[in-house]
Length: 103
Length: 103
Image (cartoon, rainbow over all chains, first blue to last red; front, side, top):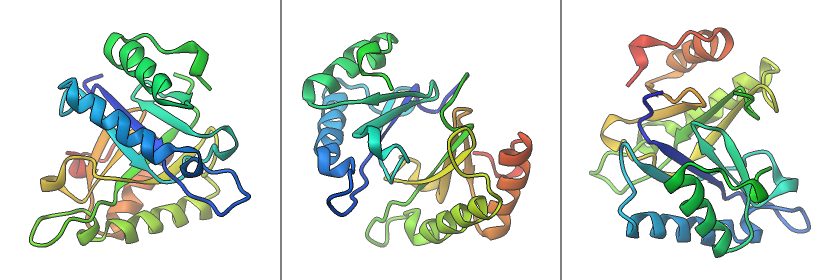
């Protein structure tokens, strides 16, 4: 498939009122910003390459924080910057989905 | 591909200060809400079916308002509710991308 972005990554950044679980309450915004900054620093952002986006609720609150990578439709649960680093280096740069983080 | 959602639709809902073009200034939020309400009314929302999401800037401001349908990676420019109706009935319900609205 000739995709506008090779990998288009959406972070769920939804905030629900406590005590409901929500991705934003678990650091999604900060880790989305971290991912975006890393991709920019690597020069991997833009058309034909990678885009890191915020999204509204992706509907998998109980599994959060979650992100999805399209067009391949691979979903991840991540906890910290090292998880993001691994998704970037393994999946986004080398096309190898990170099995231990997949939903 | 066994996708969590059969069609996952992301509307760019970014707002930039005037005079810059932005999707939100061209009705993206209202038309995203309309699409979500239509999909719900049709009973097409949920796992294995369709999800309508808001997203941050999708990086195609000059072509906006835009949405993208994954996993197929089809991008559209839309203007009004009739465009959304056509994307729903043709593409999302019947798998026929709407050529006249494609980017």
